[in-house]
Image 1 (cartoon, helix red, strand yellow):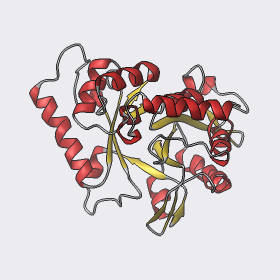
Image 2: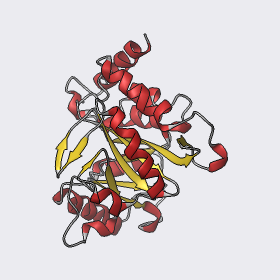
Image 3: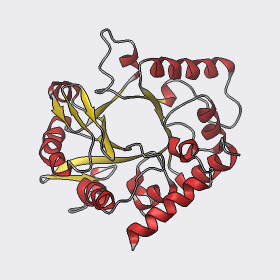
Length: 269
């Protein structure tokens, strides 16, 4: 019953943006720290978000989810909160995104990147029916693509010719020569505050507009997507980043952001 309700809610949410699911602007939203929502994961699927984020620590052999260590609880894990219910949804025939593309689960490693990645190596193959797989540079798309952020062990991941995740890159990756493979670093993320002090209370200055537009163009030219963290989380920012082509617009207010973007930025209107 729950899965049926989720499917209906996802389809109805997409229909708010018009009959062509591919234009749903809510797909550009990234559910920052989704596990802090009143109903993690379920709400994100209901709203039709394109990507969600979970912070993890390795404690007593478990990949526990939480922003700080004091928030961690036994059994509240990446598997129990995300991977198991997502696998159940896929096996029940539930689409996770209205456009059929993979839902991105950004796993933010808060500490001990190498240890966390070793734990993921052992865990993720159990979800082969769910996850995108990367084999010798070939991408085998799944319903969910895992991207590692935070304390990601880049060299370890890059050395694996058969893996179940990709890496969240940084702005410097856009300048590296040779550039990292697109299948290894599909995202480029940056702290907004390292680029601008804009809070959304007024309009972006022309030089800030050009900066963001330039970063978007550079990332897209390399086949990558762009995301900012720590950016203003208000309608002025959602609209500005959407219009400038930022691919993943982070929000801790996914319901409000999805509703506003569908009302103000739907190409079907």
